[in-house]
Image (cartoon, rainbow, N blue to C red):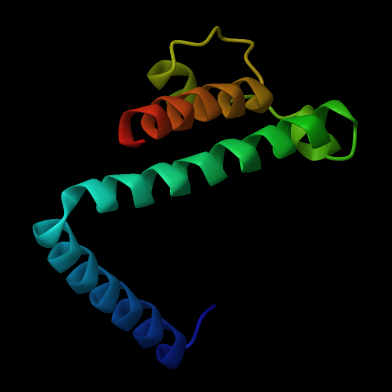
Length: 102
């Protein structure tokens, strides 16, 4: 459980970033979209590595975990979908966001 100092640091960091990003967006939205595109690109790499680790058998907990109902409904997955299938869908979403923002 994070303490009050950590919580305030997180909230303060979010406030600073939101202010900076809002001003930057007003000055040049193109750069902000590019920044978001880079964040999405990193997310695609992260989910790709996660899927590779699952496939290599290094994350057996994720390998054998069923997909949550909310994720199955959202991504229109079958009843027997696994968490790995959800990660594939999330990676596809992140890829689409990356392409939109680049």
